[in-house]
Image (tube, rainbow, N blue to C red):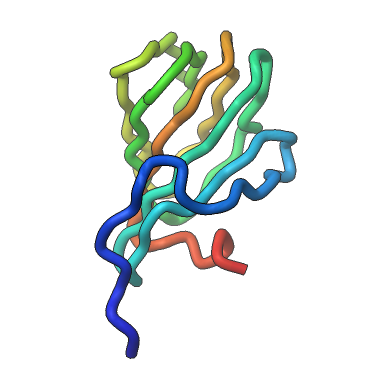
Length: 112
């Protein structure tokens, strides 16, 4: 088995379009943990969805309306949130911005 990549530089890696019209790039991952950067234009929607992974997210830039399990809050740069496994969640970009998400275990669907 190959050793996992341990470091990533800013801007490294290609953006991949997401089905909801935004973009993502996988920064680093092991079998147990994955870090992914998401980019949103103003008004961009991360549609409501759920998955079995635990997710921790950091607002690197911009302002987002974040909904988790029916509860909504506005978070700006430096804010963060956690989504427990299986809860319905989504975001709306109130201005252009970026989220850095960590998933455990990794999102294998982001690697295909």
